Image 1 (cartoon, helix red, strand yellow):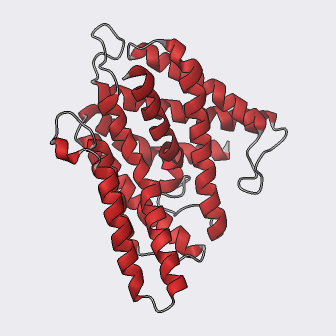
Image 2 (cartoon, rainbow, N blue to C red):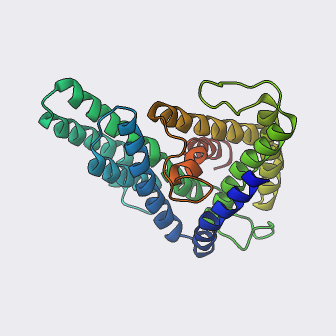
Image 3 (cartoon, rainbow, N blue to C red):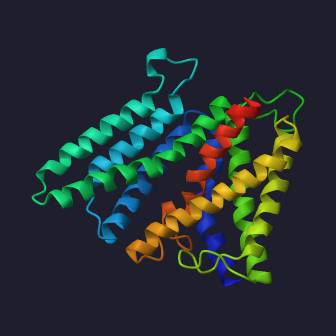
Length: 284
């Protein structure tokens, strides 16, 4: 119960901005994503520094924000065609700038580490930009759908968020009640196979309902639900690798009961690109 209370308290700091952004729609969803990316970039670069890897904080934060914004506009039909592939171009420019910034470090090994770490940290958190991209590539919501009051961006962002939260909640509740064999304990000692299955089922059910509500076939949930769930779990474990290396329990102390911003978006960093790819391939 104590864990659930801490999660509920932390949710008070997370849910209201998200609800407001979804209600207002674009460009406010992109504004919220950009602000979150900036905060998460600071956290991950500090974690990497705590793990013994030098970083270029200011450059890393700017690169993360710019690339996340570029992901949201790349290949859009309503923007200048010259912006197509802007995310890749800006990533290349960031790679160059981080390399130039490494020149000033006396030890080339230190400079190489700073170069690699800065680019990695920036590109890692910039994947949240696919939350915006998802809404742009998703099919329109039909007039007779349950969520027809929302546009495509609003509806699919809601589906993504609820799907990830369903996995997280299902995995925690089932795992804490049933327990049993654990996996990847060297990364995260609390993950159980029972929790994994519980999260998969919960995410698949929620995704099925969400697809029905946005006017798409719920049968897609048989594939999209598990894909979203596994991507969310992988995203959680990926952040755990960084925190373990840094010897940190949380990415920061910004949100009571939840740690930092990165602790709340880690699952989305992997789930958003995976869901976007599925929608592009099968539903777009």
